[in-house]
Amino acid sequence: VPAYVRITRGCNKFCAFCIVPYVRGPELHRPPAQIVDEVRRLEDQGAKEVTLIGQTVNHYVYADGGKTVSFAELLQTVHDQLPALERLRFLTSYPRDFGDDALDVMAACPRICRFLHIPAQSGSNRVLRRMNRGYTVEAYLDLLTRARARMPDICLAGDMIVGFSGETDADHEASMQLLRQARLKSCFVFKYSPRDGTVAARRLPDDVPDAVKKDGPSHCLGQLVDVQVTRATPLTLFADLVSYPQAPTSAAADNLRQPA
Image (cartoon, rainbow, N blue to C red; front, side, top):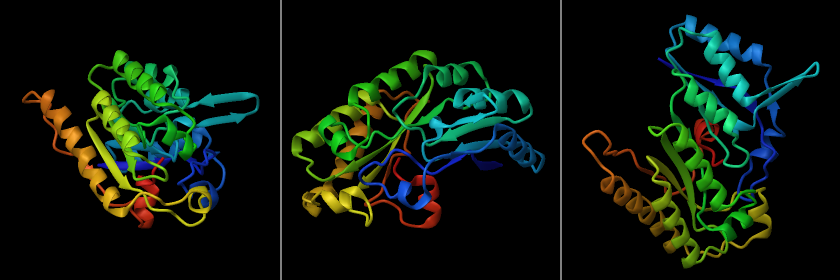
């Protein structure tokens, strides 16, 4: 039985396409003891798996009374204080500032699932700058390399946005190249559409033709299928590649699948 525990709310990243910082406010992080207590209650009610959630979950940090608890320390605490919990997960991770300390905890703790959902959103540094993502393609790939070095069996998932303002054929090909290099298990692909209230909607033209945007997800997923089949064995051929023609709009989808 899975359950979800929110550990942080809001966002400080201000990606150009995202409305979350404006509607949910700045990041607020819950006290570690409160999180442990909620996970324990869920376990007592029958939960076998708990997922810690936040818009940028790895940026969790809680300071009180001169003591600071990092995301890595929170993971270790939940894992160690609840030894009967069968599985612990977290999502969604932000590529910037994902420290080795959290990866080391994942590798050392047997009941923390070896899974990371890390949205890239684009494989073009030029587009990432326009999105105000705060990292480069090289930094994203370095994170995947660091994760795999510690956990060779880790499953990696991502998000991509196609047709963002100013995206060229060369930018799109850069995204294809990123998918070839990243070797993701699965990927959610979003067709860009301006969202009222965001920086992109106010300042950047929606200048990629809709027909081009609609082709983008199939290109991305086709590339993922090529990668998976190339690397497939009877135990590793995956079929959970997902395409969205545009970002989900329901409240529930916004909570769990909002582009990060």
